[in-house]
Length: 252
Length: 308
Image (tube, rainbow over all chains, first blue to last red):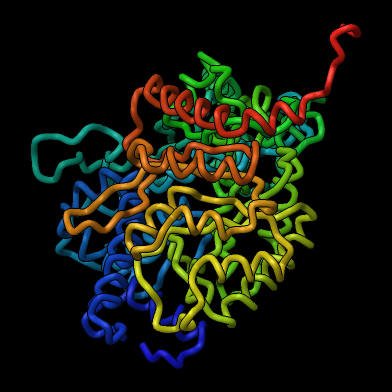
């Protein structure tokens, strides 16, 4: 670091030391004591970020192993330091970097992307801002409003279940999950949903202006699903559960 | 129609504790929130929160804050609007911050005298500034801008730092640097006594002399916390250890200068049983009461014996 540098150059150099893969090639101050302390800051900065990712995606990190995860963590920071002031957002930022690369990497466990996607959804719904606005009570002839803290994931492995003592660690089976924040705000839950429910909920989560009746009829028509008494009973039970759990907030 | 206002802390209808911010407070943390609410200990007089933990967020954090502010006055303390960063402020965030500060009714808002990232990135740590004119100009200008934006007094907090900077100006020490920023921005001071102590040990200066040279009239709040000492003697401000005896002594010296300004116990890791945390609050309260007794007596209304 040149003592004649500006504050901007100073801060940029230090940020680079914190993020770069190999700090020995970074521009460190010439004074060995000061250089050593810059590296102390590097460890503190990275330690905090690493700890926070551990809160967000613990199972994904465990699946990769400390060393394996560490290598991806290093690559992420080398590419870009966090862009959000909210440290909770680094989970999203890290996965935005890692998921496309993991998808293209055949040497990683086949379930890894699904596991990370599931944990990403769980983390997101924990923090999403609540709905603010006026709603009417649920009505089949009105447009339902889902809680913002709901995510839908479509997975090839049953990573929502406990690992099994085999390789791969999770059963290979397509599952569609509705992940949502618990009503008491303490943790998250998920439901396994079928194709019909997935399409129905996705329709509403995209804010398509279709009433309950319109959406059900439209999806049933495209799927050639007969709207029988049994179907209506099951649908009513499903919607009642969604309302009970706060996944459907009301209608507008 | 029914109203669903999850982030009702931003709404005018939110129930809020009345009363001034005085005595000893603690930082609101999920880790001990249940115990805090179950006991509602009287010795905890107010709570401090980090806006970044609540702005644009829902769920448990917002719920906890809503509950807490029914019982305690809230003071806000920012983590990421580093006043020494070169970046222009993120306008949307400053707007949301202002809404949040007004929503919780904080009497002032504090930020750190540090930098925290460059070119749109955040290091999520409190990075030290060189003690020089450029840093003074930037920090004081940003502080005034922030104060004008959120329309509240801004208190500047002194940080722990672990390295001298090659950019620092000879003869300008931390206290001169801090005083100059405060003077130019006419700001308040959130004095972190533990940070002064840690820096004094790491850089070999007299912490008491430092306290004697800071502008006591600007202090609106004090922080104390624990720190960790490495094998080589370097002290690291962790907020994860009990407050050490020397910091209690320095706190008492500080309070004798400042008078009864509110004191916050910071704890951000290795959380002890809640009773241990309360024991620390009790000890801080003893120091606070002893150091500020005369000033608090002077502030009380004089009542003639015969008029009782």
